[in-house]
Image (cartoon, rainbow, N blue to C red; front, side):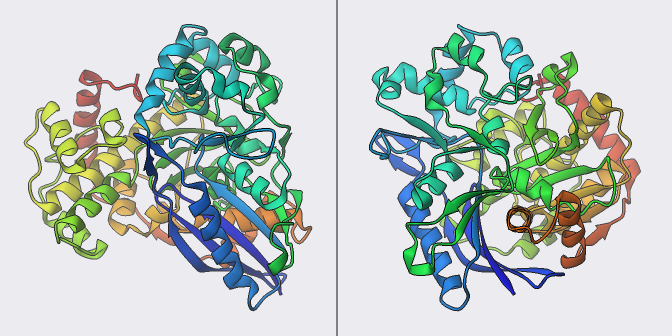
Length: 490
């Protein structure tokens, strides 16, 4: 039996998963879970790297106490980074992508390069928290900060550096910075020059499925090999999509929903720019996708209700949602107000009223509003994917934590008019473990990884129903969206 550790850092929680491979079947079991929510320091939201590292150490220790760990892989959310100095220390705590200061970076960037030129060169959608804008905001805030820094390391690369002392950038996550060229497949040096960013900050880019080196700072657990997995959590999730043929459509559903397909080369057409799509690096392909504000909306509602003593289970919330009036409180889930609102309840009410609706008051109405609006927004993005690629899809694979939400899965099937194949729920961790097996030579390639995912994971299929009412709702949703465009839709 081969034992690997898959460290998967989601935007709300991190987990250390124990992968057990017997040569024909892979099993994953959670050994430790910990919060990844940002901390507040000096008026900013920051990533508590020390807390994450301690969580990783705890999880690895729980695996190693009974089993020799062959390798470790780390994936996480994208765009956030640490700047390290000549001594290998953090210059300052990494800013979290939900920190509001990044918006100043967009204004500074567009003074030096047009958003069109930036998209044509990098293929990445405009999101105000992309690494490039974070860097520009830091540059404006403190001009000496970058000159005091030796390297920029995205979060998984930073944690790998803490484990091994070796500093590299991993391909799938590097592309999300909006600083990698679709032409050269390396750092976009012309963009860096125009933005006034030092090219020396950016380390060598390595492909997923390669060995980084031994975890020399984990002597107590035998110094397992650290692997460059597909370190962007969505890239890892796509590795685990149990599709049998291409093209395939996926929704990586968690705190965020990433809706898209895979393509051999980036699509940087006028429509891709206008619809704000991303061409993010994958394993042997590009992931053509769009970010949709996912279950963060529901997570924040749950947190607010729990703070007032209304702790409630997911099954109860979904039951209440089913009893609420259909399509009564629709809104655009991608409005920037939802990034980090002081009250998600009030933010949703305001969004519904701006669309001419009556604000939801009951808990079931609120949950139904979120899930229906998400399903309808998925349909918008899927229609755009089909227009960009010309692909025909027979089903949609929903992976990640959202695959465990049966109501959202059913309504997604109803809205899209396509069967939803749900699972695996821990898709990022599965993709992480699968790429470790590739790097160790236990399996050969991505196709064998997908086959192993299909044979190892229980899947559930939701067939579309009640499609006529969803067609009517979709027409109304598109009309309202056209009258109330946001950055994500323009």
